[in-house]
Length: 303
Image 1 (spheres, rainbow, N blue to C red):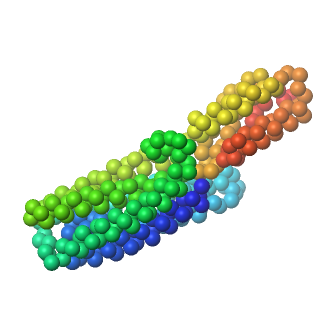
Image 2 (image 1 turned 90 degrees about the horizontal axis):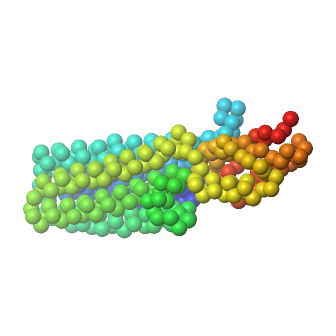
Image 3 (image 1 turned 60 degrees about the horizontal axis):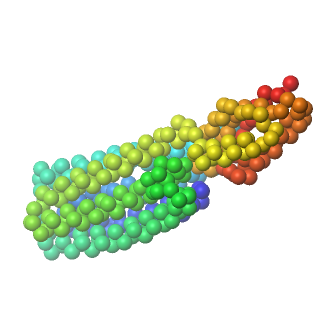
């Protein structure tokens, strides 16, 4: 999964760097607040991509004495930091710039207005390509679910962070294009400021959603309902299992799940037989759910 995340992130960084340069050039020549806000947004998105790559790299470190379960949650931590940057630097700065331009509307150079339209259309094309790459990688984990449900169920925080960023970018670009057009047609520069605020609010909403989802993973979210159903089925179909309880799971990273439970085996089974059955159950679970890589089964039969 991490490999898929990196593909989406590299695509997003490449697109955002190019888009940021175009937006700042257009903002310089036209004096557009919406374009400046969009430029800031693209810079933040580019930096966020670097943070996500850093998180993925750190999450791959091997377990050690201080972190026996590994560093998989690093990617969740950095995804949460990305949400904070989107909210504060992306949304906050866009709203701030919008308020300034409402208070002091600028005059757009009419000869340079073509810059706005050219850059926005080009940016939509580049951002659309980045969104396609991110969605293509994310779609592999949807399993027939709807997009919103899949976002909530996905444990690959890096990929859905990029997908949400790209979605916000496309919405922001569309809002910017509408705002710039209305500002020109109605000859009301103040609209540019309101457009910037609208872009900021979109970014803030995306940031809140991303922060909420990554927080759940960061503090220890359980495995999916599908995973738990598979584990229950394996135990129910095992004739040597009389009962089981205390099934606890936790995501240690996008591809690593911890599973712990108590199992009561048939009374006539000897200790060696129980131990062998535990090994067989663990193998069966890992064969069907290879991301459940750390399994701890406590037997009530061992003496």
